Image (cartoon, rainbow, N blue to C red; front, side, top):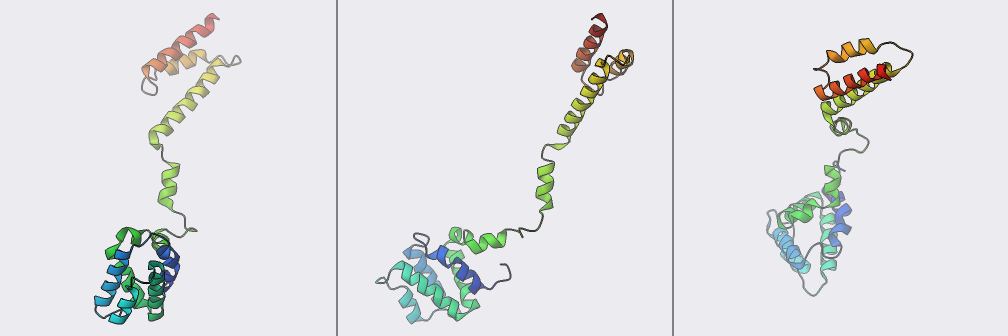
Length: 182
């Protein structure tokens, strides 16, 4: 869509622009006047009067104006978009052709977005999960009745105030001391 001419874009946006209550009478008049006054002149005085005629409905005048501009060529359509941007910027930004120009190629992978989605919890979350997994593995190893590694586990937990918090270490040490009593 980025390579298409302003005429193709205008054809694509025509339904959006002519639908009810998108453009009001005053904005259309301002656009027509701007197209009439710009140099080189896009609309002649007669054409401007025709597209500002209050006897015709707004929908008809706007449709005729857009068709007329498409027949005149790309430069005329470009000036219409410029006038629309000046007089109705919010509507200009909401145009379907503008949204297509803003969105990237749907087949292209957005690596920044993908990286954010995969790493949105950060390194602390990873370390917390790893610590829980390591703690569960150590707990399972120590509680296995086939192994006699309780003494070694006490030594490891006794020297691990840096690895796990003091409160967690104390709970684990109390549990390891209770195991031989049972």
